[in-house]
Length: 485
Image (cartoon, rainbow, N blue to C red; front, side):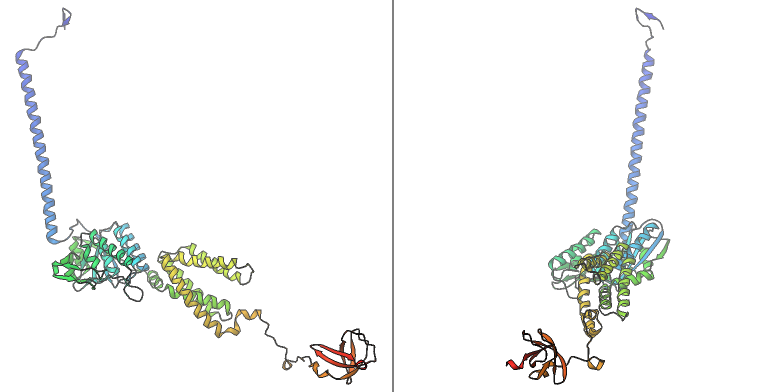
């Protein structure tokens, strides 16, 4: 490169080179544009194909009414075939946890229950919604009351021909309808929310709870009138959207769900869970036996049987709550400590402090061990009243053997037992005698040949003086000098 006139001496490009460069740039621009167009077209075609495939799958699923999940896997079948109570809630929690740990493809709730406790049903519904495994409720018989709520919380509902769902009106322990607007409104909202969560008509769910609601179901040409509680057969539930399909067995329900090759795992309650389920249903009875047995043994000792029954009843109470997953060791420790303090109160003077602490420990242990605090306090109150009646009857029957007899002197000094009682000194009144010793004012006198202790009215009487008995008061024989009368 050479410098001319202080400028760059590079050679200027010729005209043909400039034309060639312009042509190459044009070709490259056209190529890039073409590539962009082709890429965009391919992407569009791919998206369209994907959308078309998804639409086809959706259309196919809609035609079959099934979710059509991919592949296979394990299916956990969990029976819900008992009264809905705290023991069932504990069992379902364990079963769903096992399904989650095994990464199961589906959990089937085989339902045939008349219902049960609302709080237990609510806890079960929460657990089903929180499940990491897809859930399907297969109604084999009846999904009544709380059972209907459990089914509505599952992802899908399949019903067997002849089964039914509904009749979820709130009732008390005696089976009478609960008319509290607050309770009815709350449970209606829970049922409605569970139904609408999976796209079902919420008014139908409310009609299963509230008899005052009128529900029109055009799909089946039926209207629930005021004063009725709604219940649907399997066929009716399918038409109104409360069942996604009908199936004759769990296997048919799983096949409808879309699984092809699956392994069925049947989860059954353990013996301990079955026992715990029964025990948690008779907590009030166990508390009655426990309280009555312990108190009777304390107040009427010597039998042993009431104490054994009481201890066994409390042991069964805590065992049932522990296996169900509600009680911990802290509740047992509190209860035992409370009983110890109550026993000490009977032998150690503490001005009631030990008794109050003991009662607080017993109550706290029982309540903490229970599934629900409110229900536990209610059961404890009922049990205490019933136990008091039993205790009163037993104490009255065995009143001569009670612990209170230790504080009462019942020994009598009778002639039959060899004791000679004091003679009646009133026989000496009016009789005369002679003082054997000076009376100052007490002394000894001889009356009708018998020496007796006497006392004057305050004056001094010498020995050998004639006296007369004027009165006899208790152990005193009062005399007066006869010559001064």
